[in-house]
Length: 206
Image (cartoon, rainbow, N blue to C red; front, side, top):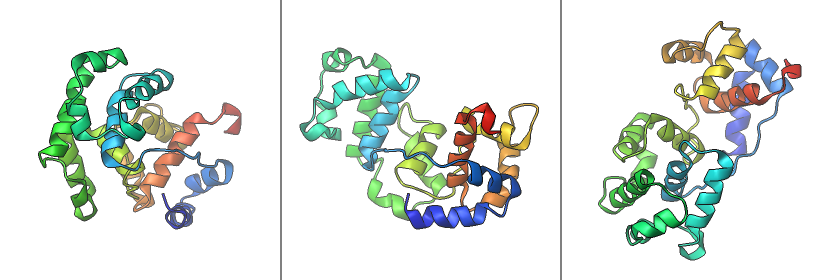
């Protein structure tokens, strides 16, 4: 995300007393993510329901199949079942990756259209792919397209961040979070990054 976008978000979020305290105490971590839409979604599918270390190992092995470690839809469609299994990709994820590749080649998913699409339109576009749900679509919007106003209410870390920031007795539902986050719009992506940092921070910080 561009520095000017983050700076604008900081200026706006400081108007909220709770978030102002967070910004004063915590710094954002740098997150290196693929900027190519197809590569980013391949990564997301492989990482589903796995620890970061295990998923990273599998992804690294998988990328060895492709020139310059850059997967393409056509190249994935040429892989045999045994090649997926050899690097630790399950049968279900193999199906997801092939469906993703197919939809990038048949025009179901057209990244060139994304700049003119709303966040919700992109979510609907991506959820048509097997194995991609709203959470994956939200992560794609935040870390690949750098959309500034995404609030991933389905993420457990975000729910815990709200609970801690607002002193809630239980994890909040989507509507509750959307209501609490209204003052942060249109900079809820950066606000969400700080909610994750709240959860990651040591107890002594709070």
